[in-house]
Length: 375
Image 1 (spheres, rainbow, N blue to C red):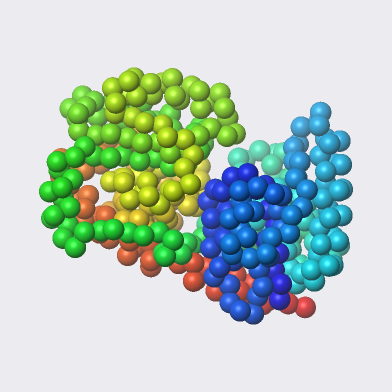
Image 2 (spheres, rainbow, N blue to C red):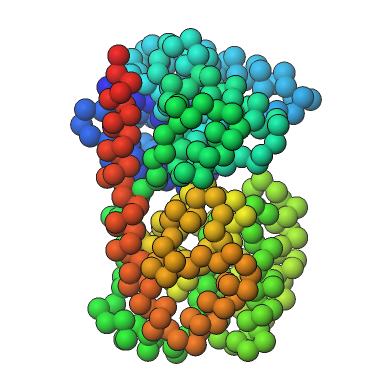
């Protein structure tokens, strides 16, 4: 059966895109994956895995002032998808985001082809969002969410629970090399001679909780000002003004040589290898890919227990859950003082990822869903 992975964008490769490529790689021989998306970097990456059918850019907005341009885009792209679906003989369409599901909606609603809506997000609880989710769900044959927290949010919005399945994301370990030393004591002695390297990977946005960093750094500076450094990998996309503001607030640590902003990076695995600990202070996150990436790289994680994060971290196993700013500060101070504890967690992180973030299990779960939709 030919499966079409439909994406609404192609300019960026975020967590959902990485997982989709890993899934396409992991499907069995009974399924032929293809991609349909606008041209761009994601399309180029997808071509290494499966054929790519280029489609027009998908204009999407709920802004009433540009509603007509969205509707024109929707009609044009929907007709392209209908023609493509007939010509390529797709057995089903796997819409990889809410926006791509909006464009696949009519095909599913008219039952031209089964539609899987793979929802990677948890939307804020608002009446308008509830209406959108319930309306879009009408076109989906099955809805796949990435965590129990995401399913709870969807059912709270009024989407029928019987349509929703939880399939947790996975990655291919081969794409995430881990260079752990044979002896953790040796690594600890090496690390004690270095400043603790703290990492952050992700968008610069309020949702990701970066505004906690100034308070964390101020607390560390009191006793550990010369014992740590931090690198921020990522840039502002959805909230440019926030990106400017957080850079201004963190400028004192840039001036002191403690902090570096390096922007978006394609070689995330290399950066994960450099970090001793990754911070994930998100206010809301359905199932952060960076936690999987860090653990596959042998990097412990300190994360705020929001959304699907508590489903990804066993406290003390591959990292720690930190409900408050003080918890981040406390664990970072412990890591600076005692690298052996940090090394012990790092040594467990890779094994934890292999056991819990398996692309093999994810592909098997999706194959079961695909089998159930065969006509």
